[in-house]
Image (cartoon, rainbow, N blue to C red):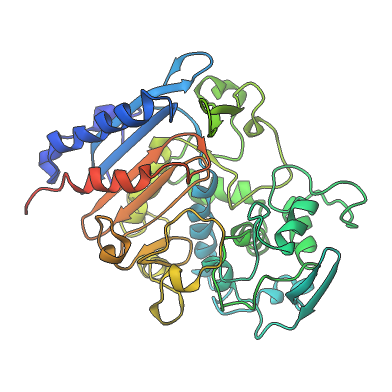
Length: 429
């Protein structure tokens, strides 16, 4: 990939030069404006479409901050939430390439307190009835969300209720004093894995798929294998070589004017402001560095990350991850080639299930016909809680990034609609 100027708009090429129809691409902006921005459903958006290493479309719409009437701008900083997960997965696989672990290693080799994890049968916290798992959890189970762990926001079982009580997977300190029965630690990741050692799994590892804090545990393992704090590891091994200058676990105060406001959908009325630049969690240092959802970033930074993935692990002649590692990460790891409709018990995730598999940190398109969207087998991607999304299509040498700030991400079908709008622009070869 070539070096980019600071302004991405200065790097936009003629869409026709990379096999995209400029008239069709313009449908993206007009559709978003007519159906989402003007009605007030989404406050602001940035959409980027690139092909063959070139940016063919970039459009900013709406407001960065509705209350202050600040227009959306190209260098706006977004909470990317679960779009943090692919970055964490790549970071762990960098350490895999140094042979510091194997994918089938039991997790308890590195977290000894997890050796006797149990599986939930009945009861409520702290009085659970449990059984032995059919096998130990492996590192691959964490990468694929087949670990048996869960999320506090699922509201499905007594196990996720215990996560809520203890504050597992949330920003800031865990639980209330006296609730968890654990000593507070200076390392939130260490505190999290210690708490998880006392709670049952939802199912025996490898038998089902459930969106979970698994990637936060990967963040702990990155610290364990590297001997570095997670933010320091990201900075040295991901952000600096990829020139991701605005990505991190904090939004510096000097960049506050670029931080978008975040909103929550309301059944009646306009979206509600839930996180403003003035008092955002992104300004506050937390001892819990969430590899599952803690980063802020920009369209330019994330474009560099995805360009590296599309270039088989290289960025500006610097290798970030090996080609073979990316191949195994973007291969479906669900048993017997199944899709998520067969495997998932999750009440929520950032992907539809029909025709979709899961790799090591990415959803994988298996069957576009079954999924009923325009795509190709092998497309991979993920999204975030505030409706952000990306996908990478190696066959078409194409990537799309969509950034906005509306919680929850299941509010609208805009991700599916964007696939139709962007893929429709591909010209005959």
